[in-house]
View 1 (cartoon, protein in one colour):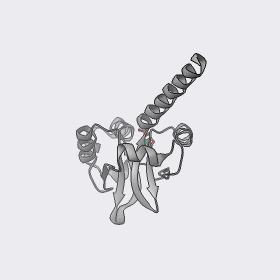
View 2 (cartoon, helix red, strand yellow):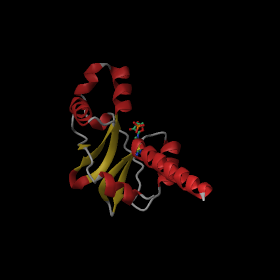
View 3 (cartoon, rainbow, N blue to C red):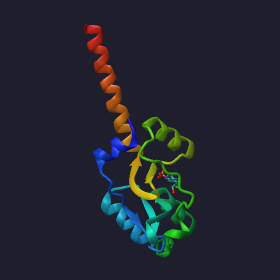
Amino acid sequence: MSVSIILAQKGNDVVTVTSQSTLADAVEVLAARKIGAVVVVDKGETVCGILSERDIVRRIAEAGTEALQGTVSNCMTSNVVSCDTSETIDGLMEKMTAGRFRHLPVIEGGKLVGLISIGDVVKRKIEQAERDADEMKRYIAG
Ligand code: AMP
């Protein structure tokens, strides 16, 4: 299964913040949308980073809750690994495992067109395993 099929099911909505947003604003967005990461987008809709709950926890551990008044730019990961719509679930799993992260922005023609989380990947893998098991049962039953 490819990224384009996952996006056709889940939609193209991506929650974003700007690099000059405060961490407190980003925390509110993460809590309100019940998500674990936001993509950081500046002028021209260019992806310039990703900010995950883990980054915020680390920052607070280092600098205390005052860090929440600082900007996203000081806390985000700038070197973003992305995928495109033609990539497969197995390819995404490899990227997530190698990079030790749970979110992959989808970029097509330089534009942000979606976000795949590890939850999306696991859901499709379970569905695939269930389909394979059903097929096997039908085959055995003749
Ligand atoms: P996560 O497991 O996605 O919550 O993120 C763990 C760490 O990886 C955090 O420091 C994130 O900023 C970073 N991270 C998350 N997604 C990506 C990505 N697609 N590319 C690069 N770094 C990422």
